[in-house]
Image (tube, rainbow, N blue to C red; front, side):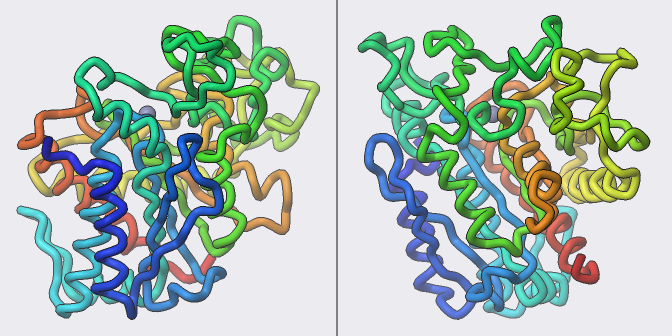
Length: 365
Ligand SMILES: [Zn+2]
């Protein structure tokens, strides 16, 4: 195996934090995983000790089988730290970032990477060829010892329209389930934030309240998605939003006029611009084209991390607005052969550097 395993990711974070201790620190997450693993994130930046400083959060391997998300996080961090420390630029084949761009990222913003949100699930998926398509965590509490009924789909466990039967239209194709034995592994958990792994992500938003951008790294489509995943976006009717109970039973149906999710036109233009920046720099490496879409284009989502992050400032105006994205790297394989995964890492890292530099170059929002 050439993909990093959970222990190797932890070792890499520790090594990076020690090698580049002036511009990076380990973050110990407060909740151990269901199987008791201690998990870490890494914060990078000249202002790393200021949790209120402008920051971007990247998460990987929320879904156990999507191994490469962790590797992308680790290589991205290592590239930035090494280039900044040496005072060099960064080359990703045909795309070159100048040293002043790397300097700008490290000095203007913080980058928080959390490569293994779901370490138990990934370790299980990597432990035996029979398990490679495992998606959930390893929570056994509702499995009744049935191996097919273990685990929660973490990306359905966040506090955002989690109660899909109440909040969505009966005919909406919401990709979630209240059945622990759901054969498509979409079980949402017994309550919002029932899982320590999703509580860790929430904790990062609470604790590092300078986070203003979030990208959750998944596979495998070849696309970058921006909010919302609830329904098609609209820019006019503010009251047509996820908090309004009048619209329960209407959400999630494509091309109808009864409900669409509100986002301001300014925010919509801003997130599409950033997503296009990512896709532009990714394409420059070897010509791969990722599509830029609203996440509803994939399917209606309930309890998903990207929408939860963007919803926080609507629910509580004291919270910072978090512009959020879901990356679906690759093509159609959850674990591309390593030679291809290496190429994917290179092009995605170019996209991430371009994305981060654009944010670093903004006036503080
Ligand atoms: Zn996924």
